[in-house]
Image (cartoon, rainbow, N blue to C red; front, side):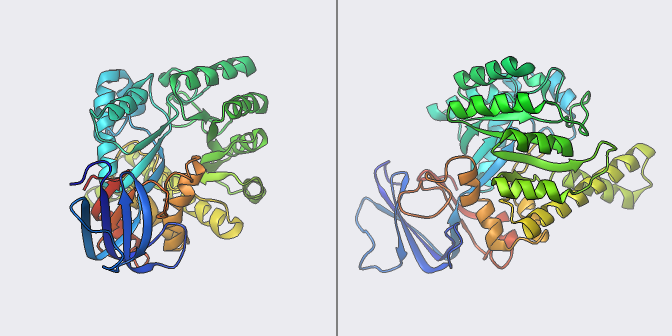
Length: 414
């Protein structure tokens, strides 16, 4: 191992830069400290040598930027438990321990950066501080802390309820004081038991106040939007990113609205469709159905998950193929961490090429969270967040399920 100022040379069969360029054959990346210093081909006469140089050689490996998950919830990851069960049963201290476990699981799946989109109280702020001190190992963490929500709204138990223009402005200021990197807005109801995902939560005026206040402090915004009307409100308010894009009508049906997609495209708003949400739960019920008849409750649950999963895939495909909307990879990791690649596989099924899926999970994702100049691609001057896989992900995106190497900020994790 080299010290923090040492040099590491990583050799691989090919390099996929995350931007979309043709893969570089017989590639070598020179890392100095935490930064990529050069990207070149393997030529012994030009590569650095000496006692301060570490060489990592992957002759059959494919080198890529570290992956970015733009939508996680670190305090959860308690499979099979509802929001309310977790919130009622677990202290902030237990949530912090679980968040540390979840973050490491995601890091070991190649996710070197996580955008955290909603946690209770100061849990994720404390996790980031612990990582800064070296107490725990995590990906780079971009945090919203507590999401801004109406009284009794989705995630109200995270404790950042705010109503009215002045109320939401004060909430934004409080979050920024606490260290928020971005502002997450619950623009509609969601999985929280007392909320309704068919209707918007905030007025356009309230959303505009949130966006304006966040932008005044140089912070980006992202809005949870399941209801179609909440999508329209968020676009009217000028949010920077939309989560889910559920297109849920007031009657509860899923119905894609081309005029809304057109607005998303025209305004250059990123979309994190969280396409894998519910997929694993659906798999469990489908497997159970093969073993025995489902109960009425299970059948209702399965029917709902089928409609949700099928609409998510359909809407993603239409936003990408028909409107060229900037799609970002986000897992909405609530039940399971470390299952990042599932979302990439579904994005591929929806019609995105493997190269575009890789871009959506690296350079474009980094740009969407305001960090495109810092990491997300294999280029000189960028942070040395790098992964190596044994198979070619351009041929089969499932290659990203198996990591041969993971490096975050020049530190080898795996």
